[in-house]
Amino acid sequence: MRLEGILSGCTYDEAPARPRSGQLLSDPEAAFVISVSDTLRDALATASGKRLDLAAGPFAVVEELRFTPTKTAELLHRLSGPARRAAAEN
Image (cartoon, rainbow, N blue to C red; front, side):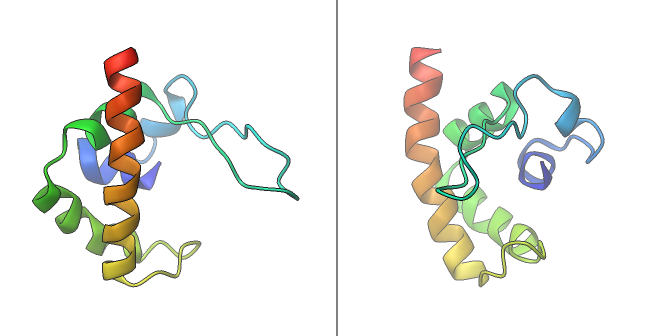
């Protein structure tokens, strides 16, 4: 939800109100898989590499992540591929 705000400009309160935002799809003991809203999917799918790199800094400070900005940028770049495929398939 924070990532959605960083990439799309929505507020922290708007993001979780969107359909499918943050719904747990897996057994949390086995894996942690959540759904994302269409807004976040589209933001990841259309963001340039530079935009993802810039978003990594603010997103890296999210307490739950504990990643460096470099590792966070790598994660965002990896997420953008599946987001592009999902957007193409709607």
